[in-house]
Image (cartoon, rainbow over all chains, first blue to last red; front, side, top):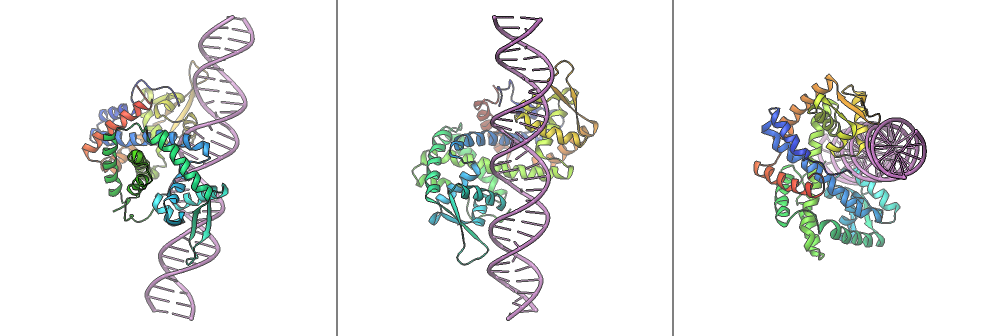
Length: 167
Length: 167
DNA sequence: CCCAGAACCTTGGATGTCCTAGTATATTGC
DNA sequence: GCAATATACTAGGACATCCAAGGTTCTGGG
């Protein structure tokens, strides 16, 4: 979005916090701000790879999830829970994927309230293609060393468990 | 958004990647996905604290940045660079903060292209109040141990530098 | 058996982010 | 000095996320 800054803006913020008498929380503040920024960078990289396929990250995640599901299908509410996003976000993603012919909705055989989403053959194919591309262009050169990956995985899993994501 | 899941969905995804023959990138994939999810959780906590003040995280960040600037003012493009967001996002945030009487726009004295944004007294006061609240309710109990904070700071700073955020 | 409460999905609204394009002002180069 | 290029901000559009509200279908207790 612009040229590199001469200084780390987050490190500056941490110093500002300390000089204001908030030194006790300056470290966590900086870590959290860094997570926000890192997420933006990673999301931008991912979306750049997915754009040629007409996919966004949200839609890709749903395709990938369905690709690993039995019969390549899931109830909407199950998808919402596993992706950990609001049900309306799933509705939105399915609307667009369905319009693109990548998934199909069908009524649940026994529960009239729930709707099943299933990959079409085209959806299955695209899910694989897009994943291969993401693996090669983003995950293979993530910018994290193997040690970093291990530490991140541990730290963030602890955090997510503590936040109530899973038990 | 829902009850805790019985299993970590990201760990499941990692296993799925491995069983598909993508074991070499399964670790980074899981780390990156965990960053995405962690960012969502943290953002939700922050916005919950800011909501009573009529602020969002984007608007708060701008207020906080101005609070540390000389004269409590900055050119729009400088704010965009330091917050590392698109210029239109700053325009959007300033529009709303200005409507709320928290910041003011003024023309740059020598460069007719640039606009300065400055905190109003109300804006300065709210910035401090909101920060104290965020410190107490989010950063003081971040969910990261002091060791985690150190490791995160190091890993994410390396990543951001490598991504071209700063030198 | 039936109705109240719960569960599931969708619609509509608010916000934020980015991109593209357009307007206005500076700066550069011939 | 003037035209070409670059920079700064803003308007409009596409997407995603969440919340609130509404319609439909289940489930359970009386």
